[in-house]
Length: 461
Image (cartoon, rainbow, N blue to C red; front, side):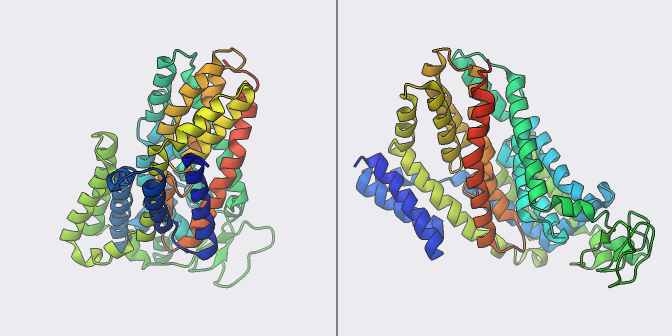
């Protein structure tokens, strides 16, 4: 049995044990990396640790640390109220606002994980506040980031278009961008329908706690007592039922002191300025998101130690162990040539259409655990030999590979999925991890075949 095949089988065993025995998959993956790296690949410790994702470790720790402080001092609650006011109380619009926001950030040049790191904590805090499925909100954030990720001025778009030009393949920047945008909008729409979006829309609008305590009205005109429901323009006592034919307006139970939540304290103001500084540092100054977030968190902790005392404990350490362990093992696979071995085996198939769909699946599977940019850089050149035969359109093939390699980033093992998992407050993290893993698996199983059928088979380009 070849070393490459052994390494793949060990990865399968890690998944099976982690699933059936409830052991942290990251710890198992570290052990597997040590065993396979030492006994099969003849790597020393330095070779094994070469795959450790130090940058992702810092991003996960830094961002969750900063937003743990923001939750502790009430800044995220304040942002949730601001979002509700922005959409006039229509909670169902918020997932789409988050989709559009992350899409806009990546379209203008933000690295996808940076955009997700900025938006996901606020989006998931909102989801926890209003009882929205964290899977729905997390998927909307990630698919939004990928929807804008291939604009001609984006990071992904620039890299893929550069590879296409270097390989002297026909290219179409606008088609690449629109292909990714349309696929992610369609997926977001399906997720919205399947995971409670229509129920949110049926709820109508909600008021804020500050409006209620101040004796004001909800956005539809009726007073909204705590925990009660009402209809357009009609007051309803707590615990009553909506008049027949009315549009129900549901008030979630408050989770913080309402008037205090609506106020901007010095700590909250400083935290908001820190979040703005994070955006500027990442998008404008091109600084590392993780190091910047840790630095800002340390400054806030120094100025307001009481609010920040428990923040370090709220860093998603199990998630950090999980992601870093799995990616270290994937690094061992890369170091010993397993990924290249699999790709070259597919590229050598004599049937171009079959090779194309298999390359899309390899891109999706590997990207669910590793760098999307890295796998696109490896797979597009592998497609050149059969693209040169003229039986498959280069524009459609490149678009299919790009979409397949990025749409799966909702997987909890990818950077974006890991950020979503780490940012979700007040959830059963193991259950949420399994949900993301199942959803990511469905995307991996379905999307490559669909984009191959739509983009490659017709022979675009």
